[in-house]
Structures are given as C-alpha cells and as structure tokens.
Length: 409
Length: 158
Image (cartoon, rainbow over all chains, first blue to last red; front, side, top):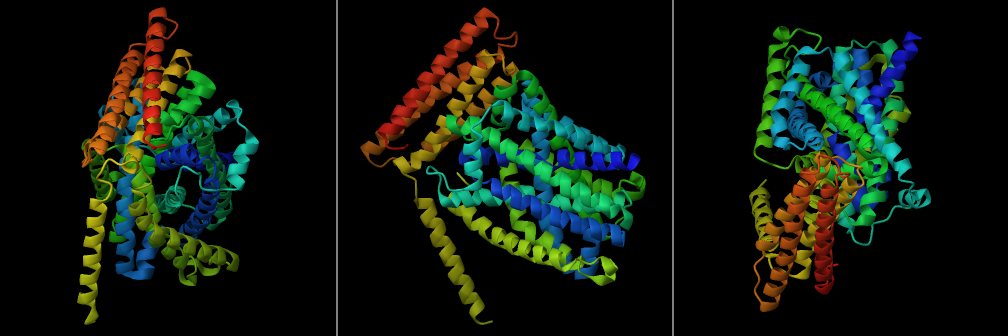
C-alpha cells in the first residue's frame, strides 16, 4: 500500500511539476494564434523529454552520480564547459522568467504591481532552497501545481466544438493570417518549452539527492511515463482554452492576465482562484528546480560538494552560487523587462541549446563503464538518435527563424 | 587556413549588408509596417473588453480584471512607440500614421478609464453605481474597437 501511494505521489508530482511559466505562456500564445494546430509539437516534446529524463534517471541510479558530473568526466572539461555554458545561461533566463511568473500571478491575485512582489518571491525561493527538505519541496509544489488541472476543467465547461478542435490538432495547417515562418518559430518554442534542459539536470541530480538505486528505476520510469504525458495533456488544455475563447475574439496572448481570461469565463472566480494557486505553485516549483539546477551544474562541473541532503555549511559554494543566480534573475527583472518576453526568449534559447544537453546524455547512457548491463537498448538508441536529429534541426533553425519573423511577431 | 580571413571578411560584409537592409526596411508607415502595432492594439482592446464583460458578470475579480486592463495599456503604449518611430515621407503616409495614432489614443483613453473603473469595482459589480460605470467604459472600449477596425479596413491592414 505504501509503495502504491509512493507511486501515485510520484506520478501526481510529475504532472503538477511538468508545467512551468514557459509551458503556460507558450501554449497560451500558440492556442490564441494557431488554435490546436501545434498540438502535435507537445506530443513530440513529451515523448522526447520522457526518453531523455528516463535515460538520465537511469544514469544517476546506476552510477550513483548525476548526469552532469558523469558528462564532465566522460567527455572532458572542454565538452563539459560548452554544456555548462549553454545550460547555465538558459537556467539563469528560466530562473528570471519563473520568478517573474510568481510575481505576475501574485499581481493577478492582489492587483499590486508585480515588480513589488519580486523581492518576496526571491526570498521565498531562497528560504525553501536553503531550509526545506528535497522531498517535501518537490511533493508540495508538484501537488499544489496540480491545481492547473483547472485548465482541463475549464475547457470542458466552455463546451467547445470538439470536432473542430480535433480537426485542427489532427490535420495541422498554418492559419491564413499567420506566416509559415511564424508557425515554425512557435513550433520550436513549444518544443523548447517541453524539453527544457533544466528538467533533465534536476531529474538526475534529484535522483542522487533521493539516493535512487537500480531497484527504484521501475518507479521512476512509471513517474516519467505517466506523469509527463499527463502534464503534456495539461499543456494542450491551456492551448485549448486559448483556442476556444481568445482566438475567435481576435486576442493574441501577450500577458499572464490574458491566459486567465478563458478560465474565468468558464468557471468564474472560484476557477480563477484555483488557477492563480496553480500558477504560483507551478512557477514557484520551477523556480526552485531551475535555481537548484544552476547550483547542480556549476558544482558538478567544478567538483564542489553539492546537494540538499548536505547541510548548507558542507556545500557552501553550491548554496552561494544559487544565491548569485537568484540575485542575477532579480537584477534582470529590476530593469523593468517584461517577464513574459524573457519567458518567450528562454524557451527558444532552450531549443537552441538542446543538442548540447541531450547528446552527452546519449553518449554516457551507452557507456558500459558507467552503465554496465544497463546501457541503452537498441530501441532506445534508435529513438534517441532520431530525437537528436530533430533537436539539431530545431536548434539550427531557431535563430534564423527568430530573425526572419521578428521573434514571432 | 589562408582562406579564413577572407571568409570572415565576406561574412562580416554580408552581415553588415543584411543589418543595413533590415534597418532600412519597414521604417515607413506603410500598411505592412502598421499591421503589427495595429493588430497588437486591436488584440489589447478586445482583451480588456472581455475582462470588463467578465467583471460585469462577476466571473472575475477586480484585481485580475484591472491587471488585464493595465497589461493591455502597456501593450498599447509599446505599439504607439513603434508607430512613432516610423518616419513618414509622403503626405499620404503622414496622414495614415496620424490616423492610426489617433485611433491608438482613443483606445488608450478607453483602457485608462477601464482600468480605473475595474480597480474601483472591488465592492462587486452588484453595486449599481459600479455596474453603470463598467457599462460606460465597456461602451467606450467598443467604440474605440470599432474606430480602429474601420481604420484598419480602410488602410488595408486587415
């Protein structure tokens, strides 16, 4: 019974933890501009993140070391540095976006300008990173983040033409008012949002934090293979709400307050309250994960002592680096830059950096020195190489499309 | 190896040319250049209108609705700056730009009134005076939307 509860909790937290500010904003933008015609990208992204999260979890459980640590050792400092540089930059951007997301959600709840909430968000994230146990932190934010199921409920309450939505999803096409370049730009953004690199680093470092062993692999596989796809369905529900309410009204999403409009229309103030709770939890959880990921990658590259299972005094540089990252994020927000804009750029830059994250994982997961008999099987390798090709194409196309479309304008 | 400096020079020259072309493009207030800002403002005023509707039906809170109006005001301000940056060379372009700016100004005014009305509607729309105020700003938002729509149609923007 206890084991069953553990599995259920793992799956629920994986669902609740799947959606972050990048998924929220990108799916709503896409739904309001392209309807459901980019839903296929969420599917492609979810399969990809399941594949590589599972791989990195296996590396951590078998070797007892986090993926980044093994990458540096196996591929050398130069390859590790390229990986570190790209993922660290994306992490800082994502931390900025997530803290901005917390502040924007609190503004939605209170009407008080988001910039005034930023210091509180910073303090809360730091306190939790500093004081709260890893498992409590992960489970609480993941479970409360499940409130975002309100998007799926709202979609049902809106009584959409399901046939029309399915038609858009299964026969995708570029809407007449949008160009093909913009369509593909947002396809890449959505792909980057679903496959954000920090998720993999957090997942594998978390496996070490929670001392996974080979016997835990079945449960972690179940969490990933059920939790992430259900999280992907939540992403599709966000796009669905925007497609049903905002697209016909001629509203293109540029802010979090617009994302809330369809939910309020469907379920009134109660649904709105649940949504705000969900957004705060999802962005807060993601802010914790990205902050920790920044500390993990730096510490694992430089060989510092790391981990929340150690007392802060025993992992001082790890904790200081996270404080610096949080302050850097807040400094960016203090310039007055729009957090939604940071989010939009962070998901595209994630897509650009994807090959640097996922190629090393594939290499390490095939190394018998680390993995023994748990190296990738043939089917996983075929899928991994196929995905690497997709990732590479998305990465190479991202910047030209960004320039050609004026960042999807 | 000896080719690399030449290659670098060619790439740099190409980048400079592309940057120059991009910088030179869409600086005139043609229908194409105005399309982006006009659509942004059109979307903003419609979103604010939906927020007011939801507030009138008590489906959203004063805080959420006024935040939406405030965000939309920001969008209109940035679109207005974008149009201001366009340099009109002919009388026709100047007239078009001024008409668009006038329409943006109406939207901006309507959004300001909407934000104020929504912020002060915290007692709930059941309050008669609050509801009347919200209905008034809703009318103002719709009028501004119509003005912008007709201008966009006339200018061939949509």
